[in-house]
Length: 127
Image 1: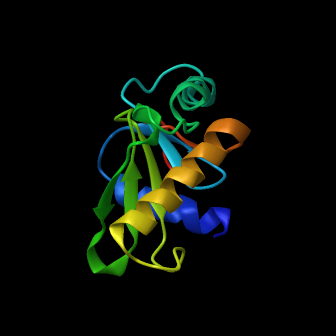
Image 2: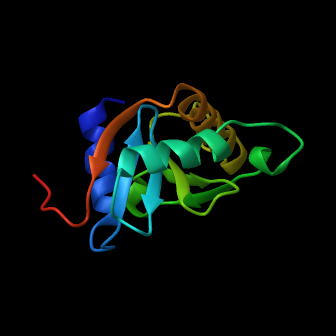
C-alpha cells in the first residue's frame, strides 16, 4: 500500500478526534493524547517500546476490529495508542486470526525499523 493511501485512511479513521498522530511506513499509527512538542520523537519512543513482537508476552497479543464498508481492519496490541491498519486486500485469508497476525507483523516491522512517514498535528490545519 502506498503512503498517500495510508495517510488518507488514517485521516478518515481519526477525523474529528482532535488528536495528533504519527504514521509509520507499514501502517502502524501512534495516536498522541498530548499533541505538543516533538510528535515524531515521542511516537518513535512509544513504538520502539511497544511495537516489536515477542511471542509469549503481551507484545504477541492482538485484537482485530473490523471497519465498516469492507474498509479493512484495525489491529491493536498491548499499548492503547498503537494501532495498525490492514487494508481489505492485504491478507490472503480474511479471518480474524490471519488479519491479526498480519497486522501484528506490520507493527513488528514498524517497531523495529521506526521509519516515520507522516505526522498529523491536531493543532495545525491539515493540508
